[in-house]
Amino acid sequence: MKLQSYWHDTAPAFANAAQGPVEGHYDVAVVGAGFTGLAAARQLAKAGVRVIVLEAEVVGWGASGRNGGHLNNGLAHSFIGAKAELGKERAIALYQALDASIDTIEAIIAEEGIDCNFRRAGKLKLASKPQHYDAIARNFEAIHAEVDPETALLSASDLKSEVGAPFHGAMLSKKSAMMHMGRYVVGLAEAARRHGATIVEGAAVSDHRQADGRHVLKTAKGVVTADHVLIATGAYTTPNFGYFRRRIIPVGSFIIATRPLTETEIAATMPGNRTCVNSMNIGNYWRLAPDNRLIFGGRARFSATSDQRSDAKSGTILHDSLARIFPQLAHVEIDYCWGGLVDMTRDRYPRAGYQDGVWYAMGYSGHGAQLSTHLGMTIADAILGRPDHNPLKGLEWPAVPGHFGKPWFLPLVGLYYKMLDKVQ
Image (cartoon, rainbow, N blue to C red; front, side, top):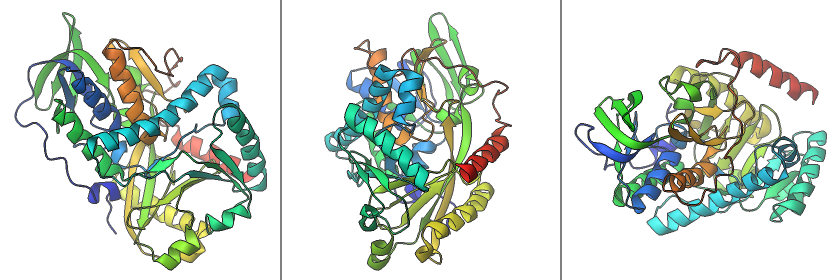
């Protein structure tokens, strides 16, 4: 078993990072070479802006290369709940932004010729308990009537042709998609570079200050100045950007990938070949990879770390969960196990905008694969002075009480959600 992201291991490395020291002045400096930062850099470079992307590790090293491979439209929250919390207008705008995000990704893939196995698969939100189905049905009725008619409510009987496990029904979101995340992020980097962006790997930003109307960024490879800065680092945001550190809770998320399944195993497990997520608070999500592995993930442990030791422990927990849901795969070999950090916000809504002199987009709370490309381009357009279509503009973002970097409270959060899963 490889303690490595499947997406990293099965994608080509980005081969066109800039060499030599980091120096000079740029119109925009982007911190972070994941989906958000690279999409913004591509958009800015296409407009003739001189842009540099500063990446601490390598392209796609963080959440963009460590996720479950889903591009799910719709909100992570109940749409009914989102209307109550955000107001109907913003809830609809955010839902539609997630729809537009998948359209945006599909358009970029076509325009730039990125080979990443993109496919409109549809997503199943599966009811793990009978009462969960009732809640899913109520949410479906509101979504179907008000914002997304390309949805359907499936009964337990309908699911027999979709997934080889006992669930009590599901909502199908037909616009949802999947792709190979590693190939996409490298393809996006290559596209940004072709349009004129400079991408530097191994250039962690250790200091940021503003002087004489310019931003000064000290990196591991030198110092640059810029008129604008975009922070696109999510859960990997460093202490020198303290405003965001106090508002982002880094939470470990873990994933395993089986050996390639046989056609018989696929027919018994995932005949519908969609993206799937169950309805538990500490839930699981899964899909088939392009080479027919089952990629299965979840918040196996409430931890703010992700290293090989932590990943291996979580992999054992995930394997047990996989065996409970799909006992027919209990003895199938696990080829990959990896983890990464999710940039959670207190209310699990993302944030994007302008604060303390810098632009930002982050807080995707486990749903960034679909939204980040679109939101990166949206913020790039705002930097360019184009019409502002940011669905999150002006959304209040209070700091998490008692949180200054290391989320000491995560084990307590985990116990709380485990208790909810027992009683709800």
